[in-house]
Length: 192
Image 1 (cartoon, rainbow, N blue to C red):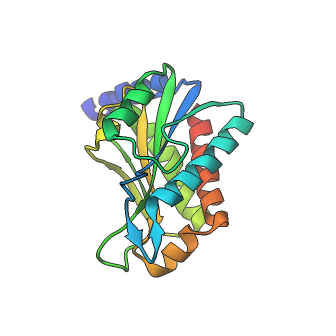
Image 2 (cartoon, rainbow, N blue to C red):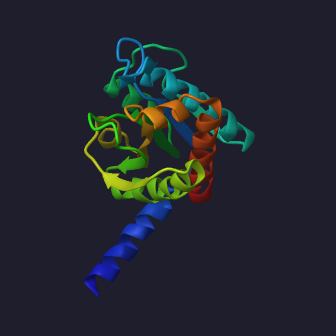
């Protein structure tokens, strides 16, 4: 009984927090921080390309967007959170590509920290694996600076493994990045 009441309280908080007018799009890494680097591919380049695609899709839906970076520049984690925290009625979406020393790892996963990010993370994660034809690694809670320091619902999306040769080949393609952006956009819009 207590668990059911707690779930309703969390759901109510999450639903209330989902009302927003602005999406802060954070292209992970950049500049001196190239992120994962496998097979000549820099994560920072893929995150920016995917973030720009997401911005275009959201603008077509009439959403206001703010980018934490628009070029290959370094922006500290604290600065990314500070940029996001300037906007009321917003959500924060950080875009990343994954890597692991085990090159067989593949798939997509979405991270959140607080209860307010859980609904958004779930909506995005439900769309990504099936559209990309890859493994669903689920929604996970993780203490990441950009999730803990932002004052709004916040998620970090890992869009595929650059360390997996097959997935890396797909991740670098415009079609894959567009599919990722569309799945994230659709997840954002459904909880709006």
